[in-house]
Image 1 (cartoon, rainbow, N blue to C red):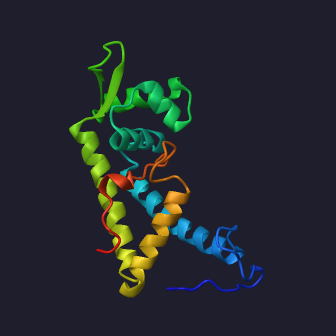
Image 2 (cartoon, one colour):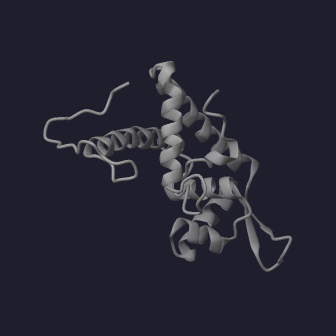
Image 3 (cartoon, rainbow, N blue to C red):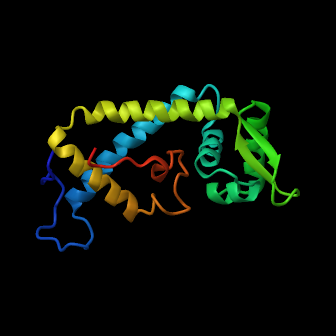
Length: 184
């Protein structure tokens, strides 16, 4: 595993205080790791891209990870106008990947749910991502994997990704729903 070091053209701060802003080298390390993760996500999207668009995949992932969303909550989660979310849902309903059902609490409110085909597509994407990450982790010495996993969880928690409602806009599955121990 690479260590944080001075790279040509990049000045690093020395002797940083815990809780202070990251050094240039730390920021660089996280950016490179993020680039790898985005690449994994993009590869998965391209593999299912013949069936859904990226905005449609975002809808499926949000419905899969949050469940019981109505159109307004979906639009808010995506940061789009409700009409845009509605059009994406219409296409997914037509494709047999998403269903609209009356809410048990309020019949005027429609709840979005994945169909069996929609769930299968989401499961396929998650499986591909897990396999890609597992393959990369095989190249990380086992003695460093726990530290890496703990560091990644700390970063995700600091970003609000494991607890906040702003999470999962890009279609990653909710980690807290199936969070294994980092000590495994």
